[in-house]
Image 1 (cartoon, rainbow, N blue to C red):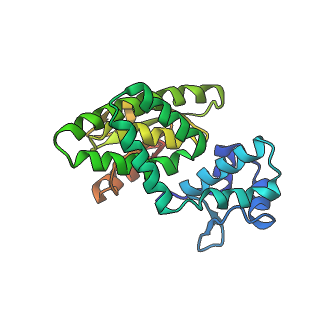
Image 2 (cartoon, rainbow, N blue to C red):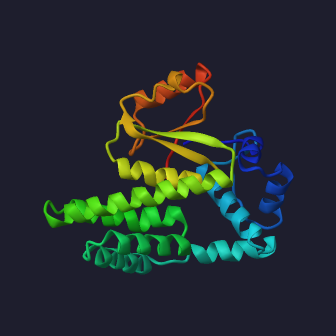
Length: 243
């Protein structure tokens, strides 16, 4: 798992380090880990939380009230997620892309992308993949609508950020999940382009000077970690992306 200093996070998220310290100490909004030397270490989950805080504040919520809203948003129980999964399955049975698109748009307005990916879209796709017949067709339809929706959402981020990055799939054949992870990353202040065809190797030399995120689908192998370290030593900017 990658960790970032407070300076790195401040630059990436467009937030003054003093503000980040205040969010932690005064308001209890952040809980970064500490290095052996006592320095703050932030991970991707912390960065996503910072972006959520920014959205609440931008919408007019006083910073002192943001913590309660963040905790409330996480209070959704497993029963609630199961209900949403069943609603998604019911919508799929109509085999009507427009209705499925409307359902996804409605969910995206009510829930954070990471929560929808982890608790609704991934579980539903898994259930559908277990059936070799009609459900596979439904899954294909769902994947098409999801990719269409995410692509449109990524285009919208062009208006909100000038931080460009490229997401590359490495030794994974789940293209839909790759697009979903691009959506997740876009909530952290990035405009994400997707290399839609996963690669056997990211080949960072083909993308000089670009911020690259790499999605492996599972925990990176030792070989992949060694290659990433090698590329870092060569000066390439690559980061393993984990949900």
